[in-house]
Amino acid sequence: MTETNGERATGNDGERTGRDGSDPGTVTRRSVLAATAGAGLASTAGCAGVTTPADVSNAASIAGNVGYFVGPQEVADTDGVFLDARSRQQYRNEHVYGARLAPVEALTARRETDAGFVPDPDSLAAALGETGVAPTDDVVVYGSSVGSRVTRVVFALEYLGHRGDVFVLNGGYDSWNGRVGSGIREPRTRSYEPDPRSDLVATRDWLADRVGSFNADGPGLVDVRPPEAYLAARGSDVLVRSNERQGHLPGAIDVHWTGNVDGSRLADPGTLAGLYFNSAELDTGGPIVVYGQGNVDPTNTWVTLRALGAEGVRLYDGGFAEWANVPAELRGRCPVETKTTAVVETSGGLGGNDDGGFSCTG
Picture 1: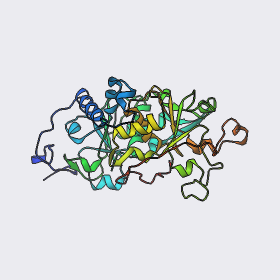
Picture 2 (picture 1 turned 90 degrees about the vertical axis):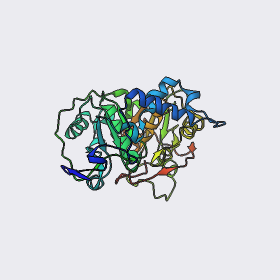
Picture 3 (picture 1 turned 120 degrees about the horizontal axis):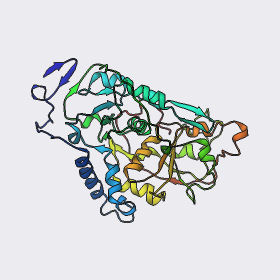
Picture 4 (picture 1 turned 180 degrees about the vertical axis):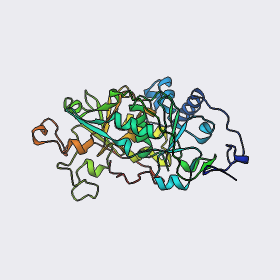
Protein backbone atom coordinates (compact mmCIF):
# COMPACT_ATOMS: atom_id res chain seq x y z
CA MET A 1 0.00 0.00 0.00
CA THR A 2 1.39 3.38 -0.97
CA GLU A 3 0.74 6.90 0.22
CA THR A 4 0.79 9.87 -2.13
CA ASN A 5 -0.14 13.31 -0.81
CA GLY A 6 -2.63 11.78 1.57
CA GLU A 7 -4.21 9.61 -1.14
CA ARG A 8 -4.11 5.91 -0.31
CA ALA A 9 -3.95 3.48 -3.22
CA THR A 10 -5.40 -0.01 -2.96
CA GLY A 11 -4.17 -1.42 -6.27
CA ASN A 12 -0.77 -2.99 -7.05
CA ASP A 13 2.01 -0.38 -6.93
CA GLY A 14 -0.61 2.33 -6.63
CA GLU A 15 -2.21 1.51 -9.97
CA ARG A 16 -5.98 1.86 -10.37
CA THR A 17 -7.29 -1.70 -10.48
CA GLY A 18 -10.39 -3.54 -9.41
CA ARG A 19 -10.42 -5.82 -6.40
CA ASP A 20 -10.00 -8.76 -8.76
CA GLY A 21 -6.93 -7.13 -10.28
CA SER A 22 -8.58 -6.70 -13.67
CA ASP A 23 -8.06 -3.73 -15.93
CA PRO A 24 -11.44 -2.08 -16.45
CA GLY A 25 -10.25 -0.51 -19.68
CA THR A 26 -10.94 2.86 -21.19
CA VAL A 27 -14.58 3.84 -21.41
CA THR A 28 -16.15 6.40 -23.69
CA ARG A 29 -19.55 8.02 -23.40
CA ARG A 30 -20.84 5.94 -26.33
CA SER A 31 -19.81 2.61 -24.81
CA VAL A 32 -21.32 3.55 -21.46
CA LEU A 33 -24.61 4.48 -23.09
CA ALA A 34 -24.76 1.29 -25.09
CA ALA A 35 -24.09 -0.90 -22.07
CA THR A 36 -26.42 0.85 -19.66
CA ALA A 37 -29.24 1.27 -22.14
CA GLY A 38 -29.16 -2.42 -22.97
CA ALA A 39 -29.17 -3.40 -19.31
CA GLY A 40 -31.98 -1.01 -18.47
CA LEU A 41 -34.23 -2.20 -21.26
CA ALA A 42 -33.58 -5.85 -20.52
CA SER A 43 -34.61 -5.40 -16.91
CA THR A 44 -38.09 -4.32 -17.97
CA ALA A 45 -38.86 -7.48 -19.89
CA GLY A 46 -41.79 -9.50 -18.64
CA CYS A 47 -43.40 -6.69 -16.65
CA ALA A 48 -46.99 -7.49 -17.58
CA GLY A 49 -49.27 -4.50 -17.36
CA VAL A 50 -46.41 -2.06 -16.83
CA THR A 51 -45.63 0.69 -19.29
CA THR A 52 -41.88 0.35 -19.82
CA PRO A 53 -39.42 2.88 -21.26
CA ALA A 54 -39.39 0.84 -24.48
CA ASP A 55 -43.15 1.33 -24.76
CA VAL A 56 -43.22 5.04 -24.12
CA SER A 57 -40.04 6.42 -25.63
CA ASN A 58 -37.72 5.69 -28.50
CA ALA A 59 -34.50 3.80 -27.88
CA ALA A 60 -32.25 6.73 -28.75
CA SER A 61 -33.88 8.92 -26.13
CA ILE A 62 -33.53 6.22 -23.48
CA ALA A 63 -29.89 5.59 -24.37
CA GLY A 64 -29.13 9.28 -24.10
CA ASN A 65 -30.49 9.51 -20.56
CA VAL A 66 -29.86 6.15 -18.90
CA GLY A 67 -26.17 6.99 -19.18
CA TYR A 68 -26.49 9.08 -16.01
CA PHE A 69 -26.18 5.85 -14.00
CA VAL A 70 -22.96 3.88 -14.41
CA GLY A 71 -21.16 1.15 -12.51
CA PRO A 72 -17.67 1.50 -11.05
CA GLN A 73 -15.98 -0.49 -13.81
CA GLU A 74 -17.42 1.83 -16.44
CA VAL A 75 -15.72 4.90 -15.00
CA ALA A 76 -12.67 3.37 -13.33
CA ASP A 77 -10.30 4.76 -15.96
CA THR A 78 -12.03 8.03 -16.68
CA ASP A 79 -9.89 11.15 -16.76
CA GLY A 80 -12.87 13.15 -15.55
CA VAL A 81 -13.55 14.63 -12.13
CA PHE A 82 -15.11 12.68 -9.26
CA LEU A 83 -17.31 14.73 -6.93
CA ASP A 84 -18.07 13.23 -3.51
CA ALA A 85 -21.52 14.30 -2.29
CA ARG A 86 -21.21 12.72 1.17
CA SER A 87 -20.43 14.59 4.37
CA ARG A 88 -17.06 16.23 4.92
CA GLN A 89 -16.21 13.67 7.62
CA GLN A 90 -17.03 10.72 5.36
CA TYR A 91 -14.92 12.26 2.62
CA ARG A 92 -12.04 12.86 5.04
CA ASN A 93 -12.10 9.24 6.21
CA GLU A 94 -11.99 7.73 2.72
CA HIS A 95 -12.94 8.66 -0.83
CA VAL A 96 -12.36 7.75 -4.46
CA TYR A 97 -8.74 8.55 -5.26
CA GLY A 98 -8.49 12.14 -6.49
CA ALA A 99 -12.13 12.94 -5.77
CA ARG A 100 -13.14 16.41 -4.68
CA LEU A 101 -15.69 17.21 -2.01
CA ALA A 102 -18.91 18.45 -3.62
CA PRO A 103 -20.22 21.70 -2.07
CA VAL A 104 -23.76 20.32 -1.85
CA GLU A 105 -25.18 22.99 0.43
CA ALA A 106 -23.75 25.79 -1.74
CA LEU A 107 -25.30 24.15 -4.80
CA THR A 108 -28.78 24.74 -3.37
CA ALA A 109 -28.38 28.54 -3.63
CA ARG A 110 -31.27 30.43 -5.18
CA ARG A 111 -32.33 34.01 -5.73
CA GLU A 112 -35.67 35.74 -5.63
CA THR A 113 -37.13 37.24 -8.79
CA ASP A 114 -40.47 38.86 -9.58
CA ALA A 115 -41.61 35.45 -10.86
CA GLY A 116 -40.44 33.59 -7.75
CA PHE A 117 -37.32 31.77 -6.61
CA VAL A 118 -34.89 30.34 -9.16
CA PRO A 119 -31.44 28.74 -8.85
CA ASP A 120 -28.72 31.37 -8.50
CA PRO A 121 -26.37 30.63 -11.41
CA ASP A 122 -23.58 32.88 -10.20
CA SER A 123 -23.51 31.29 -6.74
CA LEU A 124 -23.69 27.77 -8.18
CA ALA A 125 -20.91 28.52 -10.65
CA ALA A 126 -18.71 30.02 -7.93
CA ALA A 127 -19.21 26.92 -5.77
CA LEU A 128 -18.24 24.61 -8.62
CA GLY A 129 -15.28 26.80 -9.45
CA GLU A 130 -14.01 26.28 -5.90
CA THR A 131 -13.81 22.55 -6.66
CA GLY A 132 -11.74 23.18 -9.77
CA VAL A 133 -14.39 21.80 -12.12
CA ALA A 134 -14.42 23.25 -15.64
CA PRO A 135 -17.56 23.37 -17.83
CA THR A 136 -15.99 20.88 -20.25
CA ASP A 137 -14.94 18.29 -17.65
CA ASP A 138 -16.62 14.90 -17.53
CA VAL A 139 -17.95 14.53 -13.98
CA VAL A 140 -18.84 11.45 -11.91
CA VAL A 141 -20.95 12.23 -8.83
CA TYR A 142 -21.24 9.72 -6.01
CA GLY A 143 -22.60 9.49 -2.48
CA SER A 144 -23.44 6.75 -0.01
CA SER A 145 -26.21 5.82 -2.44
CA VAL A 146 -27.96 7.56 -5.34
CA GLY A 147 -29.88 9.84 -2.99
CA SER A 148 -30.88 13.47 -3.30
CA ARG A 149 -27.51 14.97 -2.35
CA VAL A 150 -26.05 13.30 -5.42
CA THR A 151 -28.86 14.36 -7.71
CA ARG A 152 -28.77 17.97 -6.51
CA VAL A 153 -25.18 18.14 -7.74
CA VAL A 154 -26.24 16.61 -11.06
CA PHE A 155 -29.07 19.12 -11.42
CA ALA A 156 -26.77 22.06 -10.64
CA LEU A 157 -24.34 20.95 -13.34
CA GLU A 158 -27.08 20.50 -15.91
CA TYR A 159 -28.76 23.80 -15.00
CA LEU A 160 -25.47 25.65 -15.46
CA GLY A 161 -25.20 24.26 -18.99
CA HIS A 162 -22.32 21.91 -18.20
CA ARG A 163 -20.81 20.78 -21.50
CA GLY A 164 -18.99 17.69 -20.26
CA ASP A 165 -20.75 14.40 -19.56
CA VAL A 166 -22.32 13.92 -16.13
CA PHE A 167 -22.59 10.47 -14.52
CA VAL A 168 -23.92 9.05 -11.25
CA LEU A 169 -22.09 6.13 -9.61
CA ASN A 170 -24.90 3.59 -9.28
CA GLY A 171 -24.42 1.72 -6.01
CA GLY A 172 -22.69 4.59 -4.27
CA TYR A 173 -19.27 4.67 -2.68
CA ASP A 174 -19.48 1.13 -1.31
CA SER A 175 -19.61 -0.19 -4.89
CA TRP A 176 -16.24 1.39 -5.70
CA ASN A 177 -13.39 -1.14 -6.01
CA GLY A 178 -10.64 1.10 -7.32
CA ARG A 179 -8.04 3.29 -5.64
CA VAL A 180 -9.07 5.28 -2.59
CA GLY A 181 -7.68 8.25 -0.72
CA SER A 182 -8.13 9.94 2.63
CA GLY A 183 -7.81 13.40 4.10
CA ILE A 184 -9.06 16.70 2.69
CA ARG A 185 -8.00 17.55 -0.83
CA GLU A 186 -7.88 21.25 -1.67
CA PRO A 187 -8.10 21.57 -5.46
CA ARG A 188 -6.91 24.52 -7.49
CA THR A 189 -9.88 26.83 -8.01
CA ARG A 190 -10.89 28.08 -11.42
CA SER A 191 -13.51 30.30 -12.99
CA TYR A 192 -16.68 28.46 -14.02
CA GLU A 193 -18.69 30.38 -16.61
CA PRO A 194 -22.40 29.47 -16.32
CA ASP A 195 -24.78 29.17 -19.25
CA PRO A 196 -28.06 28.77 -17.31
CA ARG A 197 -30.83 26.66 -18.80
CA SER A 198 -34.14 28.26 -17.90
CA ASP A 199 -35.94 25.39 -19.65
CA LEU A 200 -35.01 23.10 -16.73
CA VAL A 201 -36.85 25.11 -14.08
CA ALA A 202 -40.40 26.25 -13.34
CA THR A 203 -41.10 29.40 -11.36
CA ARG A 204 -43.99 30.22 -9.07
CA ASP A 205 -45.56 32.42 -11.75
CA TRP A 206 -45.05 29.78 -14.46
CA LEU A 207 -47.00 27.34 -12.30
CA ALA A 208 -49.64 29.88 -11.26
CA ASP A 209 -50.40 30.56 -14.92
CA ARG A 210 -51.20 26.86 -15.37
CA VAL A 211 -53.22 26.10 -12.21
CA GLY A 212 -56.23 24.00 -13.16
CA SER A 213 -54.50 22.22 -16.03
CA PHE A 214 -51.95 20.02 -14.25
CA ASN A 215 -52.11 16.32 -15.17
CA ALA A 216 -55.08 17.12 -17.42
CA ASP A 217 -54.53 19.15 -20.58
CA GLY A 218 -51.48 20.89 -19.13
CA PRO A 219 -48.10 19.86 -17.69
CA GLY A 220 -47.61 16.83 -15.49
CA LEU A 221 -47.02 17.81 -11.87
CA VAL A 222 -45.36 15.50 -9.32
CA ASP A 223 -45.16 16.15 -5.58
CA VAL A 224 -42.19 14.15 -4.26
CA ARG A 225 -42.97 14.55 -0.54
CA PRO A 226 -44.31 11.77 1.72
CA PRO A 227 -48.06 11.18 1.32
CA GLU A 228 -48.70 12.60 4.81
CA ALA A 229 -47.31 15.98 3.75
CA TYR A 230 -49.19 15.91 0.46
CA LEU A 231 -52.44 15.00 2.25
CA ALA A 232 -51.85 17.48 5.09
CA ALA A 233 -52.39 14.61 7.52
CA ARG A 234 -53.31 16.17 10.83
CA GLY A 235 -50.73 15.46 13.55
CA SER A 236 -48.18 13.92 11.17
CA ASP A 237 -44.53 14.39 12.08
CA VAL A 238 -43.63 15.09 8.45
CA LEU A 239 -45.69 18.28 8.26
CA VAL A 240 -43.47 21.36 8.15
CA ARG A 241 -44.89 23.60 10.86
CA SER A 242 -43.45 26.76 9.33
CA ASN A 243 -45.72 26.33 6.29
CA GLU A 244 -48.63 28.75 6.66
CA ARG A 245 -50.73 26.43 4.50
CA GLN A 246 -50.68 22.62 4.26
CA GLY A 247 -51.61 20.39 1.35
CA HIS A 248 -50.36 20.40 -2.22
CA LEU A 249 -50.54 22.26 -5.51
CA PRO A 250 -53.90 21.65 -7.24
CA GLY A 251 -53.78 18.65 -9.56
CA ALA A 252 -50.43 17.34 -8.33
CA ILE A 253 -49.84 13.59 -8.09
CA ASP A 254 -47.82 12.36 -5.12
CA VAL A 255 -44.96 9.92 -5.81
CA HIS A 256 -42.57 9.91 -2.84
CA TRP A 257 -39.03 10.33 -4.16
CA THR A 258 -37.49 7.56 -2.02
CA GLY A 259 -39.26 5.05 -4.25
CA ASN A 260 -36.67 5.89 -6.91
CA VAL A 261 -33.97 4.22 -4.85
CA ASP A 262 -33.48 0.58 -3.91
CA GLY A 263 -30.82 0.49 -1.21
CA SER A 264 -27.87 2.30 -2.76
CA ARG A 265 -28.93 1.87 -6.39
CA LEU A 266 -31.51 3.23 -8.78
CA ALA A 267 -34.64 1.10 -8.47
CA ASP A 268 -35.58 -1.29 -11.27
CA PRO A 269 -36.38 0.74 -14.43
CA GLY A 270 -39.48 -1.34 -15.15
CA THR A 271 -40.84 -0.63 -11.69
CA LEU A 272 -40.10 3.07 -12.02
CA ALA A 273 -41.67 3.24 -15.46
CA GLY A 274 -44.76 1.62 -13.99
CA LEU A 275 -44.91 4.23 -11.23
CA TYR A 276 -44.54 7.28 -13.41
CA PHE A 277 -45.93 6.36 -16.83
CA ASN A 278 -48.59 3.83 -15.88
CA SER A 279 -49.84 4.67 -12.37
CA ALA A 280 -49.17 8.42 -12.52
CA GLU A 281 -49.91 8.52 -16.27
CA LEU A 282 -47.22 11.09 -17.00
CA ASP A 283 -46.48 11.94 -20.62
CA THR A 284 -42.84 11.28 -21.47
CA GLY A 285 -43.00 14.04 -24.05
CA GLY A 286 -43.43 16.52 -21.21
CA PRO A 287 -43.56 19.01 -19.83
CA ILE A 288 -43.38 17.54 -16.32
CA VAL A 289 -42.74 19.62 -13.20
CA VAL A 290 -41.42 18.11 -9.97
CA TYR A 291 -41.48 19.82 -6.59
CA GLY A 292 -40.95 19.08 -2.91
CA GLN A 293 -40.72 21.11 0.26
CA GLY A 294 -37.34 22.46 -0.82
CA ASN A 295 -35.03 22.11 -3.79
CA VAL A 296 -32.95 19.03 -2.96
CA ASP A 297 -35.18 15.94 -2.78
CA PRO A 298 -37.16 16.71 -5.96
CA THR A 299 -33.95 16.61 -7.99
CA ASN A 300 -33.93 12.85 -7.42
CA THR A 301 -37.20 12.51 -9.31
CA TRP A 302 -35.97 15.05 -11.88
CA VAL A 303 -32.94 12.87 -12.65
CA THR A 304 -34.95 9.64 -12.51
CA LEU A 305 -37.55 10.84 -15.01
CA ARG A 306 -34.84 11.96 -17.41
CA ALA A 307 -33.15 8.59 -16.99
CA LEU A 308 -36.41 6.92 -18.01
CA GLY A 309 -36.56 8.93 -21.21
CA ALA A 310 -38.93 11.72 -20.17
CA GLU A 311 -38.43 15.05 -21.89
CA GLY A 312 -39.16 18.57 -20.75
CA VAL A 313 -38.71 17.81 -17.03
CA ARG A 314 -38.57 20.95 -14.90
CA LEU A 315 -37.74 21.58 -11.24
CA TYR A 316 -39.76 24.03 -9.15
CA ASP A 317 -36.81 25.35 -7.17
CA GLY A 318 -38.93 27.46 -4.84
CA GLY A 319 -40.86 24.37 -3.79
CA PHE A 320 -43.83 24.10 -1.49
CA ALA A 321 -41.94 26.25 1.02
CA GLU A 322 -42.44 29.18 -1.35
CA TRP A 323 -45.92 28.27 -2.61
CA ALA A 324 -47.42 27.67 0.86
CA ASN A 325 -46.10 30.95 2.21
CA VAL A 326 -46.83 33.47 -0.53
CA PRO A 327 -48.24 36.83 0.60
CA ALA A 328 -52.00 37.00 1.11
CA GLU A 329 -52.53 38.92 -2.13
CA LEU A 330 -51.05 36.02 -4.15
CA ARG A 331 -52.92 33.16 -2.50
CA GLY A 332 -55.83 33.24 -4.90
CA ARG A 333 -53.37 32.84 -7.74
CA CYS A 334 -51.35 30.20 -5.85
CA PRO A 335 -54.00 27.95 -4.26
CA VAL A 336 -53.40 24.89 -2.08
CA GLU A 337 -55.72 21.90 -1.96
CA THR A 338 -56.26 18.83 0.21
CA LYS A 339 -59.60 17.45 -0.98
CA THR A 340 -58.60 16.15 -4.42
CA THR A 341 -55.78 13.67 -3.99
CA ALA A 342 -53.83 11.16 -6.05
CA VAL A 343 -51.13 9.17 -4.27
CA VAL A 344 -49.01 6.56 -6.05
CA GLU A 345 -47.71 4.00 -3.56
CA THR A 346 -43.98 3.34 -3.75
CA SER A 347 -41.60 0.76 -2.35
CA GLY A 348 -37.83 0.66 -2.00
CA GLY A 349 -35.95 3.07 0.18
CA LEU A 350 -32.72 4.93 0.71
CA GLY A 351 -29.60 3.08 1.78
CA GLY A 352 -26.48 4.65 3.21
CA ASN A 353 -26.52 8.15 4.67
CA ASP A 354 -27.27 10.42 1.76
CA ASP A 355 -29.71 12.78 3.41
CA GLY A 356 -26.70 14.45 5.02
CA GLY A 357 -28.79 16.67 7.23
CA PHE A 358 -31.40 17.41 4.58
CA SER A 359 -34.94 16.47 5.42
CA CYS A 360 -36.40 13.50 3.61
CA THR A 361 -39.81 15.16 3.76
CA GLY A 362 -39.35 16.49 0.26
